[in-house]
Length: 115
Length: 109
Image 1 (cartoon, helix red, strand yellow):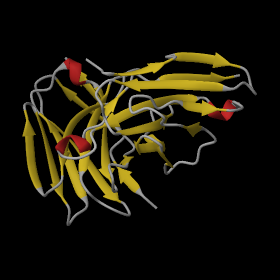
Image 2 (cartoon, rainbow over the protein chains, first blue to last red):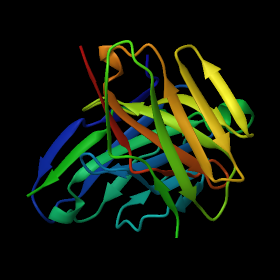
Image 3 (spheres, rainbow over the protein chains, first blue to last red):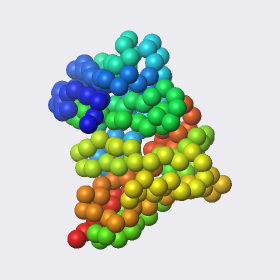
């Protein structure tokens, strides 16, 4: 059973709106990630965090921003949504070190549609 | 650039064995993972290889050859529920994963 939760699961909004995708995990994992995935395509890393107050941009450029004020919480924000932001956003987490560091646990995803 | 190549689709029948290949070219390499994703679902971890050789986990096995920049996922005794997309992913450092293009597996009766 997943211990990483994303809300909302589905969101349809108009252009120019500000949105925040929530992600919370109850496993005490240090590392958290945001991936973007279009239907039938590969996952692209857009943001990651190694712990509280640590955030880095991923390999795919994104206009979104993230914050990590608490270990369990890693929200993603789009200040002004555009149709090009339409995609699925997947949050994931992993342990800080050891064998578990190589196992990512994913949330169910947030499917965003911008009209 | 970074690239991980996989076949786009593989078909097989129940009970068969199927192999999904992955060739990679990345700026760093700290291990190869495999994830399964059913339509509309989240990716779930299957296996991880840091060193050359075969890792077995039940019906699934994964192989890595670092000298060839190549790995594969072997699925045995296929079941209908194995129909899904399978992604290889390279850890390029600090658990930053670069994912492959994905292989859609269709299992028929």
